[in-house]
Length: 328
Image (cartoon, rainbow, N blue to C red):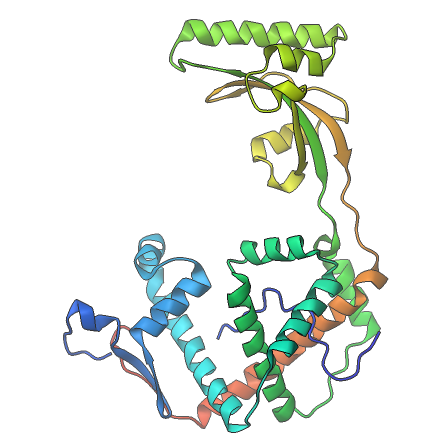
């Protein structure tokens, strides 16, 4: 494994977490200055944008969700913005630049180290709330930050094989492929959910289907005949699912069913379902050698972050920062 220079590693979701008391009109509120950092400022609009990026919620929604805790969240994000401003000043001072090719190469390396296809990579971004463009910008800032720290943190970082193995043993879930299950279903829908007569009718029909299955009749044939839901024309086939993505109610039932077995009647608000587990794929843990480079990069990044925290603390002590809003 090549360990010379920078190994950028798993940056996928490594995001840099980084007022006036006079009454103002609503139109001015978004533009008021909330903090001064040396010769730069942070506005309310900038802060609210970062809150949305980091939490996925607007300020108004976050206030409703967090209540009294909102002020703490807002203050923490403002402090991180101040750190970011200080870092950006140093990036400009050292004339550090990162090209598009460097960003693309880093993203390519991330995908290779994690053995992600393009589709899997995009899915990971969406789970993290990123568009590709936003993620590219985050990677650019991360690379600038790493170059800055490399120029400032001279001590050599050594990641030992023992550390890599320990991380692997403690985080095997991160390196496991998802458990998958292929399902077929028979769906009996209620047209009038409050009609006790109809509820009894589909209950009896469901029990009749179960009895016919016990006698050896084919699930696919019965699905074509009775099912009113998706996949009926294909013998009830619903396709392959990641077990972790299933509704907890169904996951609990399916975990107890061997491959080829059928559930009992599963009541829902819309009617009754009968599920068949047609195939199970057990999640496999990738071998250590396959993920060793990715682990090394992650541990390296963690050590860089530790050193960065100490370094940014020193920079803040030597910078002029002032929070203006009385809300902080």
